[in-house]
Amino acid sequence: MKQAVLGCALLFFPGSALAQDAPPGLPPAPAEFVAFFATYCLEKFPDDAALVLAASESKLVALTQEQTQLFLRNDPGQGWLIQGESGRYILTDELPPNHACAVRHAVHTPFSVTPLKDLAGKFVAAKGHRLVDGEALQTPMGEGIVTAVSSQNEVDEKGVPTGEAFTLAVVSYPPQPLADGTKSEPFWEIRFVRRISRTAA
Image (cartoon, rainbow, N blue to C red):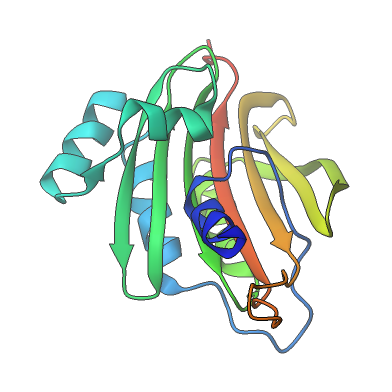
């Protein structure tokens, strides 16, 4: 039963979290993770109507309001399940005042997050902007679960913050005891977020 609950957490974990860059030698983030984020969170967001339309045209499975609130808590928004080749992904569109688009993925093997960071860097560079490192936190959550969060803030050509930021997050879950006396595999939930804290003038 506990393993089933943890498995559910792979898709419906509500807290913020983020892992550091993976050690050398690990595989890169799945190409489809990068593609999903680019398609929905860069090409469509922050146009919420365009994002909803794209999700509908792609025949994504809409989450119920109760499921969506597991991620957004009390904030308004919507979410979808994406079935990818490497597993399931969760796409959420958090509506203002906390305007954010996020893609989540859970895996049993950690991977390098460099492709996701590179995607964000190229996106802002195309506007003549750049990313600067922001807050980074790592927090034990009990029972061996560890969360880490780090953000990069977008600044314009003069170094002035634009109000946009990218956050990369991972929750790491250690092996858990099972009813038969064995232990489950460890797993990680990775989340990449584009957030807009204000509308540029």
